[in-house]
Image 1: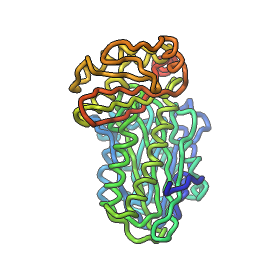
Image 2: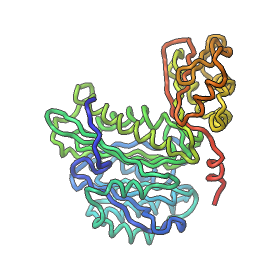
Image 3: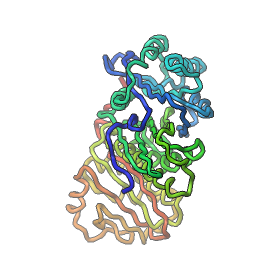
Length: 402
């Protein structure tokens, strides 16, 4: 393995500071930090991916504009309010968040990315947020990653952070990040935020290339409930303080960087799924033998998002009939009579029909907290994996409203 996990999360990389503050955006979050700030005093380059939902929250729109800036130095994010579907006033509020952080740090507003997560359609209490953000430079430091991760939590039950260290050109390079998730999690970005930092020397184009590939392999392969949010954002900052030679796509050094980044994003993605609202089981759905990559993805996502299948998993029922049903409507090319389905390697369906495996043996697999469903379509060589969960009674309760 070309990298080693280290503590530090989003502040593991040299030169990055982070922290949080309590503003009281949501009354039920009494005394819990709800604003996070990440900052690099050194010049940085930025890369990002955003929700593909056509209804985009105000902070997403503002950050999309700021992404064109050559030197983004900070990220400010709040929990408890999504600032989505809030009209032109919401756009102005998001801009004021960026301006407040910029003023506090001695930056220009366009050098700040802004994010929000929480309830949709509620105006942000921007005046008290501006006052709080103005005091935050004194609370950000090299040990602030965990505090920042906790501040962006909504219904998450634990803070999500990870960092790695590796060598490039004889230089020690660090890369880390934090994330939040919980509900509205579906491929092509979901209600999740992730902030990543590195001290590697890399230009904006190369960083965007690496991040886009990594997001496709991680955050775009998770689903909890099939709902896609208005606020999904992944932002990565690189400040170059490691002093390595500039990374270039196709080189051995770039491949090392990519593997390290993929390790970080995949682990954060798994944490999001494992901590989904009401989740009791983590399920890996792997489709192989598909005629095309598109078919493999369609099949895997159909099974991973099937409400009936997810409810069966919650109940400990290895109901493979529901998996076959989902495959049938997925839109993927298939032939029913050649499909094989496995539960943790134990065959349940052979040639589209029940195998001789005792039902009780399959029940033992589905009773576990983690298991893998492997589907072989036997039509080609393409494969695709999605990470998903069961659908529990607690999920329904959590989403009944306040």
